[in-house]
Image (cartoon, rainbow, N blue to C red; front, side):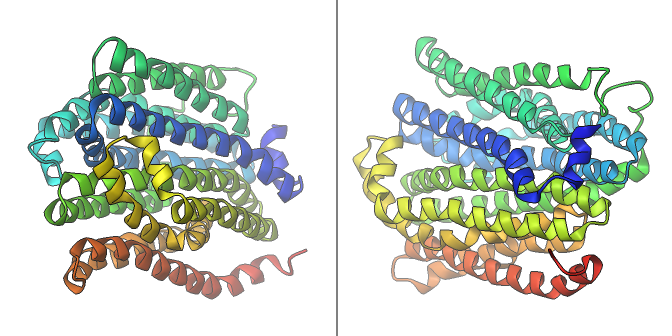
Length: 452
């Protein structure tokens, strides 16, 4: 019981690092796996296969969105119940996570397998890339249930006071994946199918590791009888809280779909591959910010449940500062070393030459993205679903989708219009986050009094 309770008593600065550092390590390891996977596919299967992976990514993100709908919402709810000392409901949240993930992942798998090729073509696949994308996603979909349970249990581990165990589960999955990738892709000549199979196997091993913690009778939050029946109140509240990251992921998927199709129309498969390279650079550092957010989430959620809003705000300010520092690194890499970064993924000179300029354009506003991500996570962590959902939709739906459709018509080179739509939407989303935060801050300060 001491681990959850420390969230309300230990210094916020040390707590944030205690919970965020394992999450950052885990998320960085996970993002590095995605980079290594892309490197193996780019060098082993060619630029078209790398483009196919970019096309398949929004489909994978949709699958992940349903996992975040359950996992993030339930983990925030678990932290709140622990802060309220309602341990019976906390355990029922755990059981509901497993049942909901199985139901939703089975639905997503069935729909995805039935309409796989039409979905991939709608997402930007061409006659040249559809074969690679199909082979990859087919195996990923068969393992979708394992993926959902893996991400759901990892979120629960962090809120239950086990951030290092959660980190270890991720590192186990990443390590096995990196080991199996070259064996399957090169040694067994399985190509992109090998990369997908390595992903599914590694997550299966990680799930077994996670289950050992929740089967431990000494744990406050654990599996036992009576927690498996879906509770309408818990389910409704968890899904409401998780709706913000869910809509963020879904909106991101639609953005990628629209941009992929715009790029295919104005620039072809190579333009899509360029976008994939840039996404992988920004993805690494965005995952670090997500790790910071994951470290902040149980602290903010627990202290909100314990009516200690001063600690909630302290965790937010510190996380915002660190997130800005993280995104400053990707800003420097994208602006100063774009050619070097691109060469990590491919030796194709055409792809390299077409990626340098758009990388500089997209990375020019990286310094403000971290703050916007943390602000949305603040409202998710304390159960303010309405504000969290609004902020999750501003960048992708309110700004980026219209700009991606409009701006190509305003530039002599339509591709430049697509590239510039991304940093412009980032700027508008960050300004919106500032406005929402300033409008909400007086009420939050009235609830907690003067911050120490």
